[in-house]
Length: 169
Image (cartoon, rainbow, N blue to C red; front, side, top):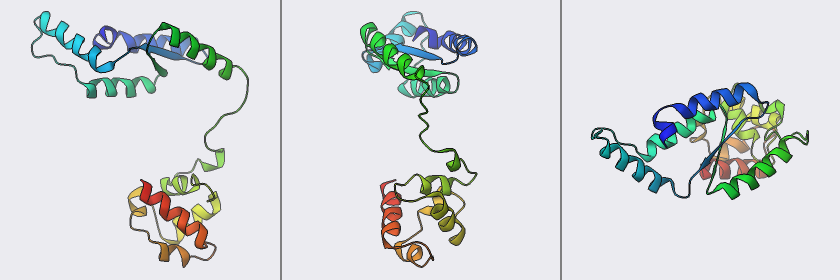
């Protein structure tokens, strides 16, 4: 937490990222809320009464770290060693583990989302997006089953899968 308050953690993350092919930053904490309470107590003790650290500050800092490196939160040093062992063996085995195939990387978020649904391929996702003029994820919220089944090439099963995925969001 101290490194976070003084931005030292971001400098460390940048240095790690520059020097290593795969960069990870291990954050050791058993309970983030109690750590935040300790930081706030220390801030008040040092007479920084106006300074206050919140869980939102932590989430924001964590999200910022994700832009630089891969933060890994563990509860103690033992768990850190176990995670390092797993991470290093997986990053060094030369297996490809992309979540989505390269063909899913398109400019339209609707196509990307629809293509991520099991059983909906890229061509069907593109077909739905074009037929219904869907340009952003909000547009998906107004799509109904009957609109989908009227699209040539989209059957009952695919329409149900799409509607189910939309309602789960």
